[in-house]
Length: 353
Image (cartoon, rainbow, N blue to C red; front, top):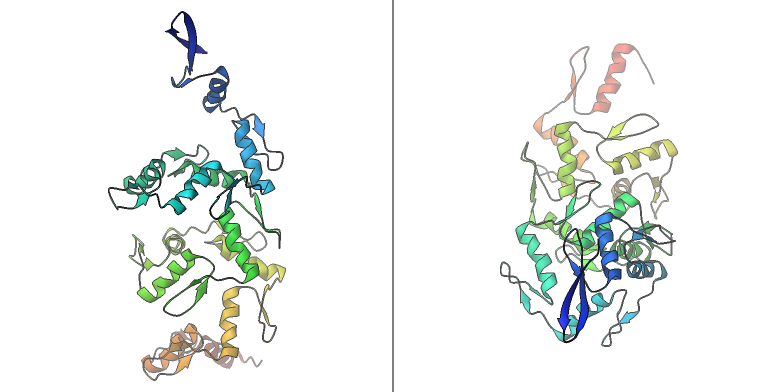
């Protein structure tokens, strides 16, 4: 219901505001109030004809379409950088003016406007005020919520013009393009290894620092990455949610399933540029490349013999420890190598291959 409020100005009665009957927020016109009431009703009458995303306001649809058209109508008069939103331009202009007048009273980080400071303070308070009603996941700001919605809608508005792969986030497309350009702008100052993005560099640096900030609360094993911890935890739970529809083998990670499927399809997308040998995953290619480079990064601390593979070093160490983990179930003779055991078993079966 529209509830007008009036005030007296001289001899004239002037209509002032219209009040929302749900939240009591006031507006100067019935049009603005009606648009606001869609927040409560869930009505989203404006639909993008390219990706079918819907909006409450026509102006929001207009701005959204720029994602598809590439239009950036707002330009910085200092550096000519362009933006989709006028608000983004205003925020950017602070880079040139040096305006950072709002300090955080917890960590002293400064911000160009009060709104940015308010959002930042949620890092310290743990406040996550934006919730998604489909999965109940909560977020620190509305932008993060909007990006997450694409997980459920399947919207991927950013497309690579080289291979046509699509992405839900613009920054992900930016990083992906470096696959085609070969650009690795982030370099480790310890070993000079280069990376596509800064987050990968930060993770890599833990190899040198030894930092393993993620700890399993069951066995206290520590990990460099949160994702590694999540995968490890399934060891304790036994959860293997990804199943091959060809052979019913199950996996803890979706990526493991994707790699496994290549066993059935025969796809071997990783090719050695020296001998053209092909592999079904990148890690096997990287291991193979040591055949050509002569790299032997694993060293025995007893006799200093070096190896290309960690597994080879592990087997070699048995020469020093005397460990023979493979045992014949007929005569109990033990072996260092599983292959040696298999050869020996032919003695009992009479097999000769």
